[in-house]
Image (cartoon, rainbow, N blue to C red; front, side, top):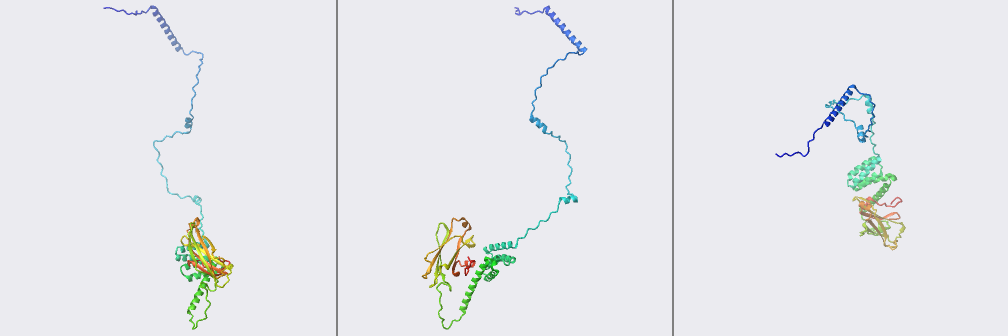
Length: 379
């Protein structure tokens, strides 16, 4: 076979290398032995060696963690078994006498509310009676007014309401009895005295007229006719200087008014009689219905004018007075009251004496009787 020799020649160890290794091993053994001897003999006094310590790294403190650690206490340990609660005695135990006296001091009883005064009670009963009468319950109205009369027998307001209620019931005798009671009170009855006086005078006049008519009917017819008596002019009351002719009320269209009326009043003078115009007084009053039940004097715009001039009745003719009634639309307060025209009263006075009158409807004369003679107190 063909042998191929290695291109790198094999190295051989020489004696010098072996000798160096032997020397190194001897030196190492000697060192090891020396260390063992020194260890066995103990430590030697060797000079101190300065040690340079490096500064410790700065510790970063978390303020929130420290605050939480200082304020939040550790949760207490929960025992495995909780103690059973003791039963509580719920029964009430009496307090000692001294403690009970201090705990519940004596409280004075609250006095009962003061009873309303007699005047207040009478006013309440009168207002209640007016409401009941407006509703048509006259029986209960009389009951309430009698209660008020028992409290205050001389109260003009109570007697006036009783008289008005009896008139509404058609009991003229009872009404006259209470008008007399008011008249007997005199001036202390205030405005009710004037009303009672007018009522009694009107009743007296009617009674005289009825008596005269009855006597004339009962008087036997004479055999010979008496001398012709002086006849009063047509439409004149006995002894009257002025008289009312036919009164006409006409509605008028006005876009600015809820209602508008024109009242035409012809006034006649007694023939061959001089009339002093300065002594003539004419009252024309209009009345409204409020809320469908209460009759009151109107608050509408009222104006008047004579259509014939001059006003002197010098030719025995008729002088005409026109009076206008207008309820305006733009008045919110009047509209809220629901006012509607109800009627009128005309009164003619000459030298303070009542000459003639008209009313529509006639029932207004019962509620607002005209005085037979004007005085300083009369409206």
